[in-house]
Length: 624
Image (tube, rainbow, N blue to C red; front, side, top):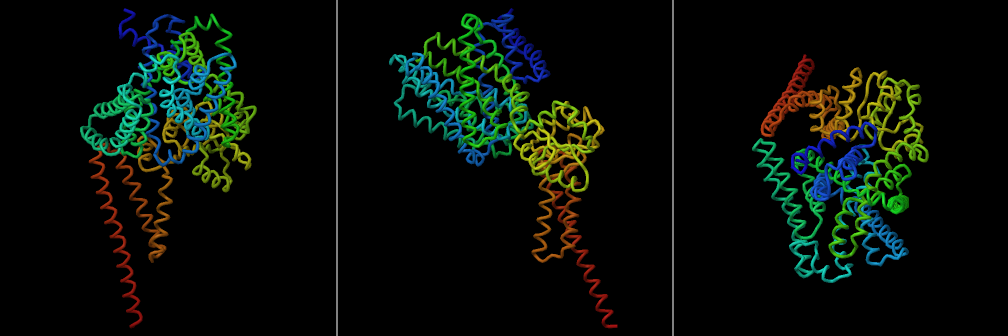
């Protein structure tokens, strides 16, 4: 019974359903919840799962592949090019310096240079899954720390390729190296130059397929109006890329990321992301549970000082390297602590490299088992380390401390008792806040970017650091006594999350919501929002008015036309937001555009007739 597939599935799901909400409730994050669930049901706990957890972990690594595909979807190639300095500079230095330091220390303890170099490369890796998941949960992905972390993690994923190619060369036994070159891939028997050609052709195939073939395929699937077919196509894409990359000896995660970047400009980007996201979340959860269950506690118990010392020493070493590099690349203190502590663990790709190194004869079984325990424990420690950083280190040693302490001491904010709360104080919220202040209206401002909080506080503005989507923070900020909340957060998902929190806990608040664009406005209208402000709409109309005036139109005529356009567009926005079918939407949008053109033409004709009538009356008066 215990070995049946359904029983195992029930155990995994039940452990996640029980432990993750508890961990979230305690403020520990979902990742630690999954890891603890794995420990509880694994060999060290209730023994519901045994060594098969290792096999499940290899399957669950596909969650990391899916996550990188989704990350790629959110990165346009132009943005990736802009990040080249951080990716190559910050990421390259992190991998190079960490590898060299770890290898040097290992050689001081009598480890051969080949083993030391392999250990250095393994330990240089950080956990893409844990770091990105944690940063996303805390809303830090778009901060300096989030972007720097992403750059380093991306370079590490790229570095996997040369590492896998180098490991066979480090093997002490030539026979082992020959037998496993390329990780057992289909091209492993080919000469090196032919392998390089196959790799280039595979990468080119992904880019060309993503650019020219997939769009008509997705269009065809969308026309079926069957969501499950679109989901199946998205899964087939990711699985197919993973199979192709694995067969040529490359990282499937890298291939999936590349495909995501190619599709970043596609009109199906958001649908792809929403289709993949549930599978990504479940598989990542399964991966973390498997990591927790794979920790060999008997080894930890037999060598506690060695394991704990290695975990602490390696995490502190990586933390120091990252912090120094952050300083070199001008990452300010608050962001640098988040960046360096967040990436201080050893990542999930270390399991792949450790397994490969044993196959190749680079590392012995005992060293591999010890390092597996060290890697798993370091991953489990990361959410705790980030929580300690957020609650204690940032509040004591960084300029952002004033804002963080505010979130933890209710009296700091309650004294203000302002009628308005502004969530998000970037370029949009800043203009609103300054306008209100100039008119004698004080507002309590919440922002999740610690660098922005530091800068604004030095300017004398009372801005508080924190995630405005949290009920506790809103309550502390005086949402129960305020009259309205202005939601100016830049992240679309966070805006919708905050709307739901306010509707649930503070229904008396008037919500005035920033909208990035028309599609975002549709989502906000469907969420029940009445006061939506498209950040490009008014500015675009003002530009259009100026353009008409420069072309010779009268100022009052251009202004009146803009008002007519505004009223018509707001009315059509409400109608179009309710349409789900693409063809129906296009038809309705065209009708509205034609209707608008007729209204504007009729308005111009009326103006011209009035002008003619005025001239006639003037001529008659002059004749009389």
